Every structure is written in structure tokens, then in C-alpha cells.
Length: 193
Image (cartoon, rainbow, N blue to C red):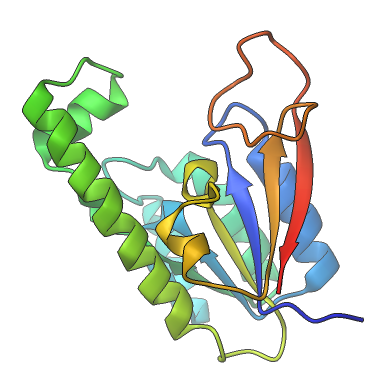
């Protein structure tokens, strides 16, 4: 059997039931560590960490607890370390937070700022992923937005030894938003060694 250091699961941020695929892979692999974009900068390592977040039920301004609750409960029940790999509120200031949450039109300067933040986030995610590269004898599962898993992303061009499990259309193209034609969404698997 071929061993891979990382298994990436592309998140759609809600246009399909992301947890269903996450649960399937976690149950199959039984990892010691799951890295997750939506947890931003939160680390759930101890029983107390899990109990505190389950009591508070709060992630951030940009991530509702309900978006990650099932994943948190699954990892807690399996004694898996669940580590955030992103910046608090994805690095957005209050104005960008509101505009992004409401899908509001961005000014030219806000578009430029957003692009800079997205690049910063990718480098941050890459650095966190590299920190956990050799901390387990099992593959590390990484859940991040499908957009971060495009072929030319900072993350993928700086890593090898991974499997991608990504939402695709029937032609096998990566989906970062629902298919315009309302077509079927499937998961594609790609390997890189």
C-alpha cells in the first residue's frame, strides 16, 4: 500500500454537504490530526479544549459554530487533534467581513486588498501544514476550501506526497461554486508523489 503524508478534502463551504465526505474519509483513515481552514486559528488538542468550544459554541465572525459542529463532535469522539490552519476571520477587517458575508460588491482597492489577503492566507496555511507534516505516523487530513486546491495554488505547488479529494463536475473539473448548468457534483481523487 502506498502511504501519503496528506489527504486534502476540498470544502465547498456549503453548496454540498461537506461533512458527509469529511466523515467518510476520517472514519476510513482514523487520523491522529485533522487540519481545518474553517477553525481558523483554533486548536482543539485536549479534552478541555473540546469541552470549552462545545460550551461556548463560537468560532468567529466569519464562521458560525453550526458550520463545523459535526466535525468538532466527530473529532472529539475519536480523540483526534483538530487544528485550525487559517487566520482569525480569514484576515478580513470589519468592512471586508461584512462585504464578503453579504456578497456585496467590492471597490477596486478592496479587490486588491482581498487578493493580498488570499495570498497571505495560502502561505499561512502552507506553513501550518508543513509544521504538522511529520507529527503523525498516519496521513494528516487537511480540510480547506476547494479554491485553495487549484493546480497553481501556493499550497499544492509547494507540497508533494498527497491525495486530493475535491468536488468536481462530471468532466472532472474542480468546482469552487455550484455548476452553472445545475449539473451533478462528484468527488474526484488525484494523487501526487
